[in-house]
Image (tube, rainbow, N blue to C red; front, top):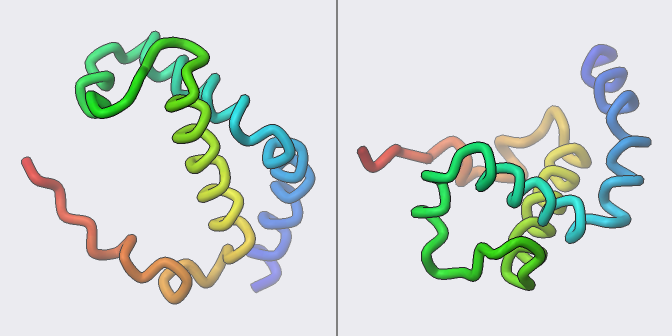
Length: 91
């Protein structure tokens, strides 16, 4: 358990900074994804994927918040997020 605690402690200061600006950083990550992997835009047809759009800020913020939640439950993800282990690819 000490290794898990050490890993979590290493990431916590970073995520405190990131989480404070979750929407902006998440939006930038989504923009980078679409710039470097343009085909991924086809998975987001239901939202406005233009750079800086409110949809990208909202979705990017959700991703950053989910990562922060995962960090807060590091070592206990199966109990915290039971649905994650049940993912089945569709193709």
